Image (cartoon, rainbow, N blue to C red; front, top):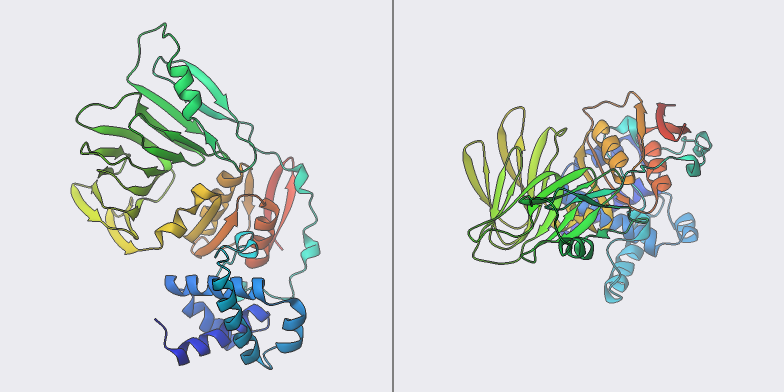
Length: 382
């Protein structure tokens, strides 16, 4: 916990940053400070209160670094009022925007001309692929296309089809696969709820065995496992995850440089590279595929699993990884023609509803521009 004097100094620094006219020394100080994950969370809360509680006229009259103390006091009082009103910590301004912190040369500046980007987002082409469900008789029974940001719930669809007569020899497993821009939720035979994000694949039995509950995942999924004495096992290409009843997130993409598990509650045992490790709530275990190194770190599990609720969190990703995440999240083709270094690390948050706000925020932050050509988003240097 920050001491009062230290917090006051940090608040003054953040006021300067959000005011849009920091000194070079303040930019350098801020870039060092924000590297700490807990500081990112503090900055998010501070920024939200800035947007939610401070009107533009107040900022114009009382800020400009001439008097940041008055603004900070105002924000503190506003925080107290907001807590009393139990306002959600996810303000619209924060959810629909992105803050990318990397080098001082890429910091958001007033010199960026928003008129550089004038493309009509109605010209974007979205993925036309649909969620595919294959039941245990081998038949492709449904192509489901969800609308907007809603998650397609497959429970009723699968149950109804499962009751139909099976004309061919039954298989052991059902499968569900999701294309770009789609997410699904399903309930397995034991009552376990699974959220499957875009470009993912889940294979599971129509009825679990008596001694184990076992599924196979490629991509990313969030599991709310029904408690039982029978172990629930998630198999990926890198890891085997075993639980009895808990909530956790698993990501194992073929194209990724690592695979990971984030635990929300309960405990999880992870088997990888001939080793096993038990993790606890708010811990993330990662297997780095190139080095085979296994690491465990503390995270905000609720924050990093918000994708199932329609908010994509980007943390420590390279620019190519950010582009891939956005392409998958929104179901659009994004072409990166910039020279943004792949070694820079990015942090941010994206609202499912507004791709235009997300792309504009990325371009402003990275000092690049975009255009739309043949239904594709093209990112270029200014």
